[in-house]
Image (tube, rainbow, N blue to C red; front, side, top):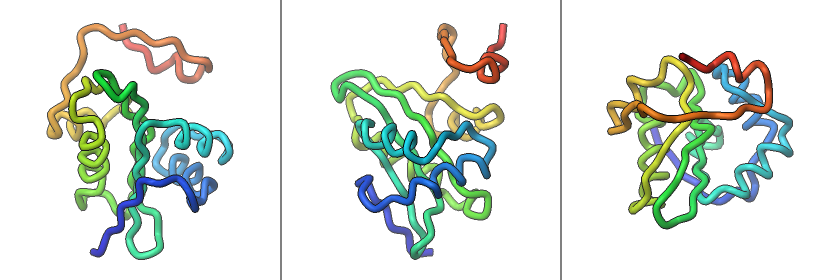
Length: 138
């Protein structure tokens, strides 16, 4: 499995990003929305196997002491091969002195715990859609 890691947003097929997020059951938007979000991020990572995009993720950050990871996705057929770990490690390598939070898909907590993340006791959110509001826990 020859992997290619890209950290540049030029040449990305943003429809593929939207389709991939939908395919893995994550929130997705119109392609141009993803383009703007990834391009405005501190770090973006895209993993290709040959010419196929199989995973990606991004982080927003001040580059000094705070960062947040979003949109980490690996296509189902590529899961279980260390691609998600590679994406996270690549992002963390760009934010070596930062505290990192992440917004994870329910059920992925075990994956992130293996990478050193822990559940937060405090955290709050304000979502723009009522669908996302259903993800709150008491």
